[in-house]
Image (cartoon, rainbow, N blue to C red; front, side, top):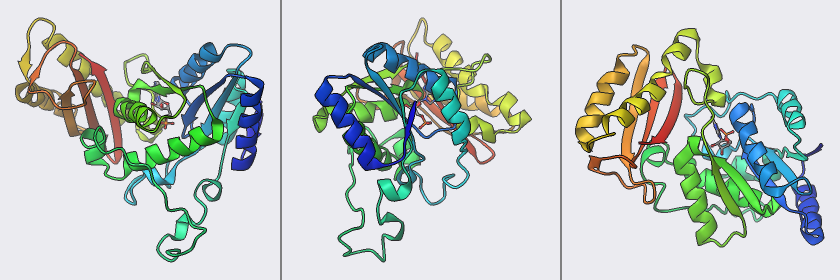
Length: 294
Ligand code: AMP
């Protein structure tokens, strides 16, 4: 396994593989890896085979965090991440720094007019409006920008994303189609703890009581699934029922619940089997998300 911290070196390697006809599988992450990330790595390996290469990027991307969010606290443990990558047969871990990825960006205001400072962003204008996009206005622009950059550096044939971030995966698929990136996007299932809580690097923020109650997100998804098995229900009524269900966990503070069409991500007024549900819930300052097809 090789660790590549430099943008130029990453791109050079990728171009060499491309010329040699080696298939490249890619899993972008923000590190602090867990079994969910590793399931994406395994999926990438399956797609490119033994002769292909699997690249994992570990980069806590500052442009997808608002100034009020948890960029500075975001958990990091590169040593542990590298061990985990090695154990699952990753070939390359790409670990760029902020100055490699966004030269000059830190001082954007004072850098206006400076030809060397980073100033180009990728914006998806449709699928990113609701849910996470509404709650976190700068988030998806940061995500599409960094993923576009990473695709240009890693030149993947296949890139694997998690269903855990359903809206993100939909936006990436749209970006790839709209901007003609020559990469296949695979969306892999959400990996869960034994009690059903979706694995997330942010679960580390939870104290013991919050962790015990955090399973309410999964239970809310299950309750919604059960409610629409045989009949369709008004979205407003189901939201109200689930709001009450969730606030029965005293440490939970609901941010949103949405029922939507999985293709357009537009909200539906009537919820029936096959509709998608997503929710975001705060425990203290920690914001957890989950989603499922009903
Ligand atoms: P992150 O490091 O949180 O940016 O996530 C990197 C990738 O891992 C994204 O494609 C996520 O959707 C995916 N991911 C995060 N948590 C899970 C999980 N529990 N199961 C499957 N994939 C996940």
